[in-house]
Image (cartoon, rainbow, N blue to C red; front, side, top):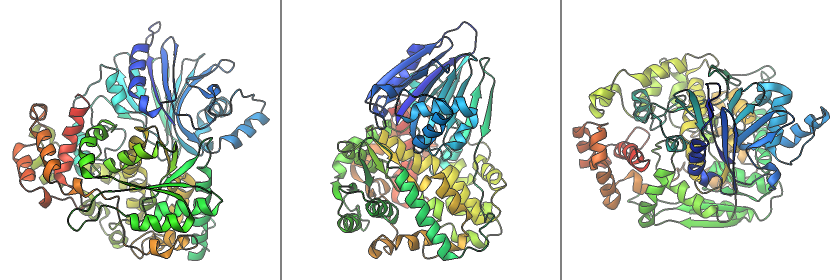
Length: 591
């Protein structure tokens, strides 16, 4: 787990800027506090910050160069099946000088070409430079767990693990992208790839390999897609069969994510998903497992912690459990650093929770498993059941999911930024794609492959990596995701959703955790903006930079500020926090 950066120049004889690459590396330092390196070869320069998880020796330092093969690589992530791939490559005659997964990627690329990504089980973003051809190959994992941002510059291309790193390199167009802004305001801050909130920065979509030729021409290949519905051999499966397959596949996913040369802990919220991960680790012989929970004070009738449930799991499995309670008085000053850690503005209330939790957890372990993704993969959200009988999937999804319709968008945004109903049109295009015929499956696929990637997954990556902590997400094992897509929605949606997962969990998780009311990572102070939090928001929106940027109509902001608790999105978010967070992020990034 690390941070990578690089620059490619397209004019013969023009050297890549090591100054720009170093500036990006410096910005990426929290992602990789254990080592750093820089590689330059004419038109290409690569930079890296390392967090030592696998092969703690200097043999796995990056950028890694294999002179015999004529390849150099920078890589962020973890390849869980690297040992199996190594054995196969040794059988082909390859010799290894390290014990890590980075070198496996170099040899695998040499052996199988760009399609080597199809053999990988893991989370990854990488850049591979071919010395002899001058070609650079960029890639990202199937579910977009690891990020990769791109910026075209005059005569070249830059890339990095975070958007702020690219901005730090200089010369990036930092104007607001109107299409991205529309998505941000519609999808509770999700901006689907390839867009970002900045005109001059794009992100490589998940499951994509981009080949950049020396002259700057490029081509992209999507190497994986998610198909819903039964596959060959599924016809005779009943509920019991699916339940057993879920438990078996998830167990394998959890085991895979133990691959490390350092201890692995668990972020234990007290919900079903993290409790099930804890249970499977304990059932598979993990003793002395460290688990971590965080809580805030209650606001009104909204409880700020779920310790009562995480305690049940910790006690049942005898984990080394750590409760972390954070007073909002500490959360407010830390909020600035939390926002600075965001690659893109992310509005979810629990960003600060993950940020503070990660700071504490990183003092004890370098790797944790986390439960993100189960709700999208196994149908845990309230908007799925109504789609079972939907006759108009686009309208029904938009009604329950969109934060604003086009009419409110026109009220909220400065007229120069309103434009067309970009988000509705984008949704229509996504729902029309083949591979998911039923309305509910269209929604599940969209949430798993897009909304999940640029909300919970990005949030966990950004907040954990800000503390030099690696988070692994077994519910996004691509084999588990493919399995869940084959299971009929009628087996996922009953009893509040995730039904087949809940029934599989009964084998190992206490019933009190499975049958509890559905909870969320609670940070009430950012949902109900009051006192010093509301004053901070007011200061952000009234700052000279905000008035000069003029993203929002003043009368709209005044309406939200006058009564913030009355303006809540369909998904229970604060509309005031959403607009304030965007401006807050711009200011903290120095934009």
